[in-house]
Image (cartoon, rainbow, N blue to C red; front, side, top):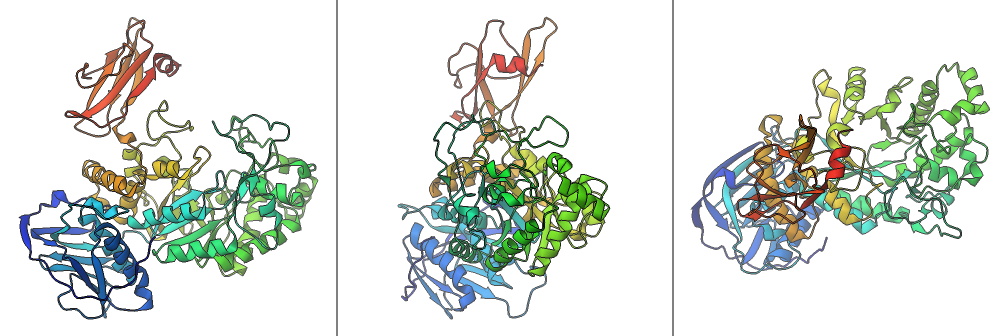
Length: 634
């Protein structure tokens, strides 16, 4: 984010202009706790004076307001400790207000100016993010906007989060994203009051964080072969094909990103995924493996290494750490020790998911460990591993967190759990007294397809925006006191660049934000999507990519009594019309409008559809092969 120098000049207040501003015109995401609209609006003056505490802790807040206003409005910004006629007043409460807590705020916009009050600098920061959403969309632009009337509607807002843990996970192992790209992702998180960046730093496809104790993790483990196409089914390496695709973050890079996130009131939690998903580590240090021949292993580039068709998803190559080898724990002690120095956040995520155990079953070392420790199953072997890793993490002054597989075989005494395979594991862990973060595939796996599979990179499941919006981190039957919050996860097997990262995250990230910040009783999908469309315009100004998939209809295929195919089309967004063709031409609003179940003509090869709102196309042109529809009947 650009930073601008402080300009110390006088402020001239513009006269107020009055107009009725109904609540329905507000498009604040996440929805505030309470919003009261008033008559009138405030027009930003030619020069903006901000009254605010001039402390070091306020620097991120003041940097935000100066950069936003200077970049988009071109107005001069002056910050003063005392300015009775200031256009914007940022006030830290001298006596804490228990209603708004640590991250909440009060925002009051009157015809003479805007006041934001909070108990903490974080609260003021979030109040400013709401203020920007009350301003015209051009505030998100990257250059001075012309011919914009910079107004703020008169409104009073009381706001505070439902959960303290409001997270997004980005997988940088399957595909590497640069430091600047990660920073841009954090910027967009902060706009929507998300405060936890889960950084998935290691996996089979790459080790992305410099560990000085083990340099091969990045000289070897950070690079693989560049391939594009359908990840998971890539052909074997060609002779001489170079392993130079990837990258890693130096420890100085990590410190820089951590500081950058802190300035946006975002914590960063690192993840080192063990004992499974560890091929990059094993390729770098084969002695981490319990399997002979591991010295021939290489970092995965997208070839098939697991058999997901069989129970227990056996590995084709052993991508696990040796739970019976003392070098494994010495290695992890060094790794966690260095991570603990880089990341001030109290939790370190140590993975634990999808650990194939077929190579452990064949290992004499693992068999000896089972006999020595009286372990009956491979799940108990993993539990033994997790409990030892938990002690390592705690020895570095951190808290251990893992995916819900750490329940199998017995969860460690102090472990926190992230529930991804639905909410069942989270309910069980919370009822056993463990802290839980809910992150179920059902609602918040952002790598899933957002539209019909003919429109998206192929993944094994779909997740519509409306389904994500149903996410509630506190399901029935759980000890709610131990639910820290929720997050969404973006795995990047099929995500090759930062523009696709943005596409996969937004607008489902908006739905997440409202699910973890806003009161559950205030959630309404139709109202929410009306706001989403206005934020699409803001993302256009910011040149940030998003998915228009919510406009795409769902296709449900059936068979008529005479064996001909039929198709039912449904929209998740109300008020839209669908136009279609079977004649291979591209429909517009002058074509037949969908009003009920379609019978597919016997010789048709394509069904093309497009969605309109009134006279304007809002959806994408979708070409659905009839052969694809037939395949769905099987």
